[in-house]
View 1 (spheres, rainbow, N blue to C red):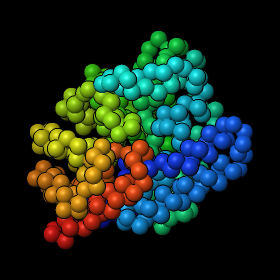
View 2 (cartoon, rainbow, N blue to C red):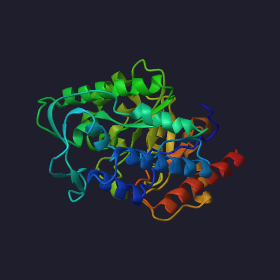
View 3 (tube, helix red, strand yellow):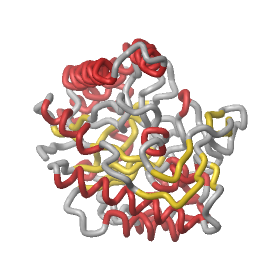
View 4 (tube, rainbow, N blue to C red):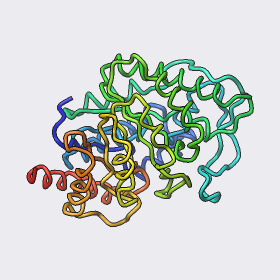
Length: 338
């Protein structure tokens, strides 16, 4: 990858156009063909690519715009899930934040490609930028479902990790060099971290790609979902074999800095969240630059990547684009100072 000092990227999702939601609903009603739905997805992704290119982002994604949600996209394509469950709280912070619950009724298994590689190929064909793919982690998929089959949660998460490993191998063999695994649930269950790290490391072992692990506090409708703290995950989190750790820094006054100061980074690159996705105001480049400079007391510039705190799916398009532009301009200010 053509990385540079303070490489800019995104966490994954981008502002979801209202018209795309309307077209999805028309497709469910049989008023839009599969081909017409696919054309709509193609156009949405092309628009997302253009925004990231115009903003100047270095490593881009397809905005996850083809995905119903970060969970349903996977559970609808993995055998063992039924997607007709009741409403269930997403996190453990606010029980009123709910979504319909997938149900695990049988041993989960992969029945064919989930589609990550095909979607990444479309992205790569339509940009000259470096790219990455994002994949929802096995614990997130497990915790967002009602388990009516497995007596051992570790077995369930291991089976899901095996499915995702095959999907990762497929997209890497297609040419993708950077894979990000998203596990916002880890913050909510720190007592499970030792064996979760073990499964994560097994899932990516021997695969020839760069891996990033993104951990946040949840971000459905731009709201925090989990009670836990990053401090609950250290130092065990540093045992993951990911090359990068992607964490929120903007919304929490750079909370992870004290943890990296205390425990080090194990020579990992740190993807620093410098855009607060929960704040409706668009940061100025100067605000972003100050957030960036603050981390250099603990993390050397050559080990720092930059991103928003989390995904941008639930914010208006003009706000999302404005925040990306501010991030890139802030990075430019700091580079010139360095």
